[in-house]
Length: 321
Image: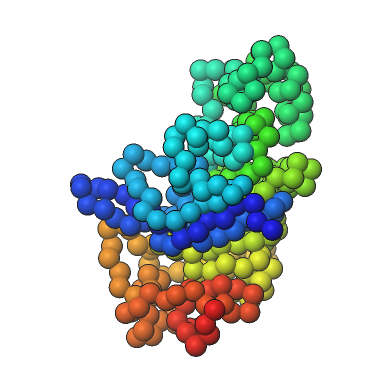
């Protein structure tokens, strides 16, 4: 059963009075108490897709079509005052860079108390125990002492735990984790992912995990959406994605993962992700695809159901959903 449904989401940017489409017909469902990964190269539209859920988009952006359904409400139809009730309390965000997400001028307690004050209106004294208890849940050692620290006094891993604590303070049902391990070393990455897994299981939280790290996806995620050039090109559960990828882009991403033994040749993907200024006819991946044929250059494919996958590719043009 799904807790959040994104349906036919389209958005773009106005630049010099011209509109450039960025997201095109984004569809995915976040299931209860599952981790749903959104993967792809930088510039694929992963973060913008999830920022649309909370309507945290730049002023020159516009959502032109779609629905985002949560608790039988379309979040896209809510005004700014209404959507604020969902931010943090129902759907929380773990930003991309823990090093810059905390205000360097305020103590950790002041920043965490601000979250509580928005949602609960507690006094500072009443909030202190709640904050300490939450910091223990995210494995902060000596939380009483850390409350008086400033961000520069904390390690990168500890800052990320503080950010996760912010999400927990609102008791959110959904956490959007935007590349939460990017700036951390491998050991701390594993600790943060184990922490998210623990919170999912113990707090009944559902997680959208934005990443380009397929190794983490294979270990921790339940469902996967693969994005390219503002489109989802493949949807499937994590096991099926890695066991039998269908889209050429998904295959190329998996082939580019290095192995510990080093006995497998690492395949690179030719070229770069197109920019929003590039007008491409046909399938947007055809310029980089080794399976490309004439139809790919003319027509953007529709979704097809192939085994347990939903795939946008002409290789399966004889298989209709």
